[in-house]
Length: 235
Ligand code: G3D
Ligand code: MG
Image 1 (cartoon, protein in one colour):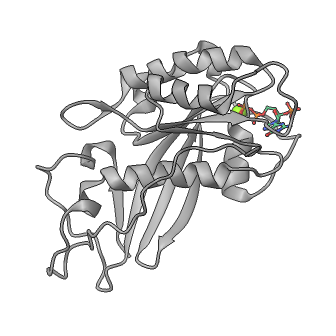
Image 2 (cartoon, rainbow, N blue to C red; image 1 turned 90 degrees about the vertical axis):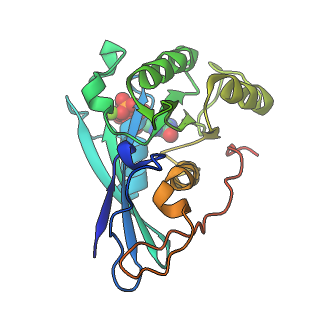
């Protein structure tokens, strides 16, 4: 079964040839690098663990360096999406990451903790860091980023923003959407990730070219539904 290693060089580059990637049944795998960034303690590792292994643990030790996790999504009968999730584990204190770390990412999740307003203030810094270090296509568009208001199972004394204000914040700051999440209660993590993947698949030229009769090539018809706007778990 072939795997499309979809680095961001292959997104929105109409001039790039569509390599022979589908098997005889037209089954295709896409591999996407996704960054998970945000201030320390906002729940990045918990979100990844919940999403990938469906576990929540108060007792794991955060590692120093970069952790990777792989999430395989059976997108539709002919498409498998593999998300390579990059957890910055321990590097948050530097407030930014090196360009090499962001290289070839095609999407990102930025987390903040709804109980600590300072972590929301840091969101703009993380977004700027991503936008300055990784882009897509010859016109250097920003990669799609979803904002996660995590720990929504807890009180929000430290952070009072309405859904409308969050919508406006996302629009003004170039986020494709936002979700209230809880790694603890498994709220909206799957939904937020699928929302990001839908967006990435729409940008992937190999999925959006007209279907071809050529058996050796991938089925490029776009079967994705349009993404709905970000939501929150209290709605
Ligand atoms: P980080 O990877 O961004 O640094 P972690 O954050 O995933 O390590 O989470 C930091 C702490 O927040 C952990 O608690 C974790 O259990 C907790 N946490 C993460 N997500 C949630 C959530 O959605 N709800 C609640 N209530 N807690 C969450 P400890 O006590 O282990 O430091
Ligand atoms: Mg961590």
